[in-house]
Image 1 (spheres, rainbow, N blue to C red):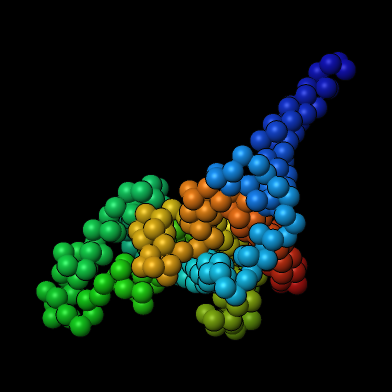
Image 2: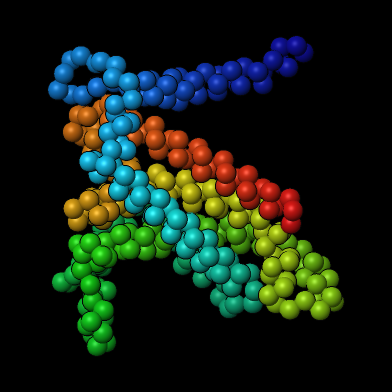
Length: 291
């Protein structure tokens, strides 16, 4: 009997042991190496204090632009995916025809590997032979044809658009599940009180949908801060450094053998993700409780 009661503890200890070995220890080692000059050009690893972090925030270096790009990407993708996902979920939750077909079509991009998405959109957005520019020219909108991935004014917007296209279906599914969990009696009571469509949305839908919105916002936030694949596949950070973000910069630093700077960047990214996640969860949990 006592032995059977101990089984849950065995599994817990085993899980904690794996988490310690594969996450905690490497994380602490990475944090230590961010204070060293570790690189591939020397066999010695020397402790240099906060020099790597000073370099990251130095005006002479370009690292702050990568931080800015990461925050800008996160901000716009969180807003666009949440708003579009909510609109699609509300449309599919109401009396739209062919609900099943539309759900599949909207969710389909979410299950396509990013490498495949990148290859497809590199072809679609090709400035000379891409489907998008060819279509625009065919309907007489030549002036709207752009060098989507190689023009510094359009490359970042194009990456945001592709990421939203791929991720909005996933967000829609979560919000749709949240909408379908709201009892119709709330809307019937609001209708009896004379509430119009907007008032029902503000006073019934939003407060009761807040748990699902918390989940989607945190997921989008973390995805935005650690974005890598879509940037790497479509532009590799170019043109120049116009679309480089923190993760692509970390990848490049490690590729150049500058491991100390790379781990310092990783530590900064970890700090951003922790702070952002903490404040978003606290803010939205407060709204949920007040609602």
